[in-house]
Image (cartoon, rainbow, N blue to C red):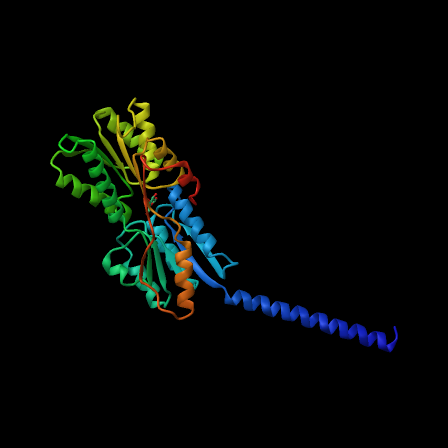
Amino acid sequence: MSKWKLVAVACLMAILCGCVMRMQQTMSQDEENLIVVGFSQVGAESEWRVTNTESIKSALSEENGYVLIFEDARQEQENQIRAIRSFIQQDVDYIVFSPKVETGWKTVLQEAKDAGIPVIMIDRDVEEESRKLLTAYIGSDFYKEGKKAVVWLEDFLEKQGRTEEPLRIVHIQGTIGSSAQIGRTRAMEEAVARHPNWELVAQECGDFTRAKTYEVMSGILEKTKDIDVVYCENDGEALGAIDAMEEAGLKCDPEDGVIVISFDATRLALQYCLEGKIALNVECNPLQGPYVDEVIKRLERGETIEREIYVEETQFDYLTITQEMIDSRKY
Ligand code: AHR
């Protein structure tokens, strides 16, 4: 090889090396710029929960500037506490979590605060003293959801001229101690206390699942079939209760059978609403990922944030729902 060819090859090699080094530098800079978030989810007990997980995962994606460490607690609070501690050890930039129940978080949240890691809680609430340790809360007002259901029922009975008749109610509760259960239960119990002719003939836990509610409802139906209303604290429970009632020969029909009330407004349950099997479905909005992304991005820019954000929610009843409404929904 001539002297000039050798010089040319050497130059080319130098340029290539420079490019590779620059690429490596940019890649590691990009990686360093990613925001690391640890997310502890309650589990996968319902359609709602699965949608909520997907919403967080797609909002906190790598393309959107994040590294997401996801932990499914499989319905155990201990697993959530362990996950939060491991996020603290890994020194993540933010912790996001959806608490299974309202109590028992103070110590671990204090540990996160002491480590200087902001905690954003989603979906369910915690008791007051733990709330103070959070950077932000994004979720639902479950008591308000329950009140919407009760007000609808009161109006419906009035229109039917049934306000004075005895009303026998089966109440299927969600995971006991979760704020979704506490708020929705409180609204129904207050309504029962207000109406002397309303009676809770059964109040049992369906754990927010179709399978458990089918079992529980089948047991209730062995004792009585004299039921006017079944108030279920989520869609999975409503579907399980309807399965059991139809098997036992009961008709789920607000005008000529049992009035079924549900929460969440997921697609399948809304289809049941269109058929009239579910009379009312109060929405609980699981699409909380974009709200979390917005809060984190604002904090990153040093902007002030709202400490409590309640997601937008509506309601659907069998009288006004249409197929177009269901088709246009995201979940
Ligand atoms: O906390 C939200 C509730 O939890 C939803 O209503 C229910 O479906 C879920 O499992």
